[in-house]
Length: 320
Ligand code: AVJ
Image (tube, rainbow, N blue to C red; front, side, top):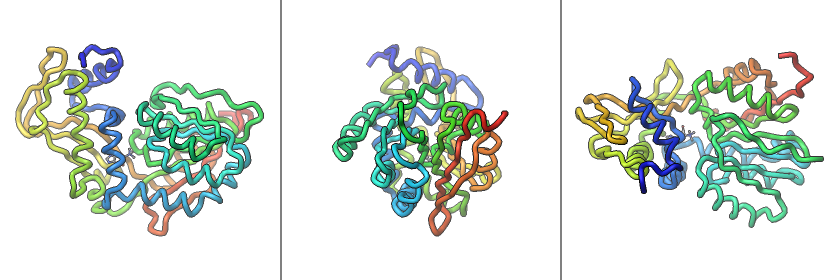
């Protein structure tokens, strides 16, 4: 694969910027190449990684209640749809759902998963969209005579955003989904040791997932990261309410991208991900500041994970 291959240009540009800045930092969206997407699916099965199974259990128990809020002929858009596991509960409970638009950055993964889903829901209009919802939004036009437009954003992927990016996301919802709703799944603040274990699993799958960014840069961009000289590092930053993931340079070393050398000090890190943890009240507050209205909340008995319903008013209902 040639480093200048045009499909790799955004990764190339972002990696170049990542290595040039201090501290070094790259977007977590680059985790999800085919290898990384498979590793993420493995993470979801780990005993330490409670978010996926907890969210699935909440969906399983409360899908019928959620479907009541969606109403008939719902038009669902899912952000970061991944392997389309969670939506099945909502689609089974929904009353004559009209359309399902799963959006994900990992194209191959999305196409395969959509074909499988179509077999299970033969009459549903499934329109997969390969896209990056962190860039300006391009949503399909509303269906004529369709029901409520509901954006489903599960998995606590919102946690990848900075508080500023969360505000932008809510304002985008406000603008593009007026009259609809957002069903948002988020990981809740809990004991730091539980959080720590979820990102430092015994089998090292999360480490492999994190390190895959470097392997991907070697594959797609012709970089020369020495995979044995970088280590997975993940810890809970309690004051900032987030897990931070980094790739830690174990020695002083130099890596190349496009013939340019970039130095790493021993102990220097390439930051790869924030995974913010939330309180229900804090998130509802942030949503309200962007003009959304708090609705019901569904959670598990331990309050590990929450699904929030947020109503998005019609344009004329607010002045902001
Ligand atoms: C998909 C972004 C929600 O932050 O928990 C899992 C990704 N990173 N293990 C998360 C992830 C390390 C995950 N999100």
